[in-house]
Length: 117
Image (cartoon, rainbow, N blue to C red; front, side, top):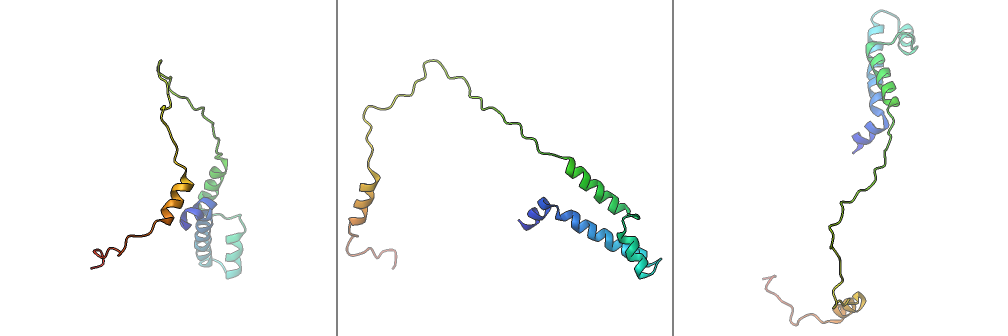
């Protein structure tokens, strides 16, 4: 669930960018001093292939917009002669009275012991 939430919020781009910066810094340290390597890594003028791919991925993700097209509910046509008729003898039992009566009934005495033996 946490991974899905991180992916939905775009945390995967942050992880990939961190990997790209780490790789660039390690590569730059082989040819420059520490200060120059850090500057060259984070100045934005010398992006690596992974940085370019991440930027393209972020850009393509931003262009996608969710457009919802509300659909009308269409019901199939009814057959002729179909009618819903309520039954003539229809009675409702009040739930409050049925529930109240069930609380006032006493349990059987002695209690059944066949399950506990």
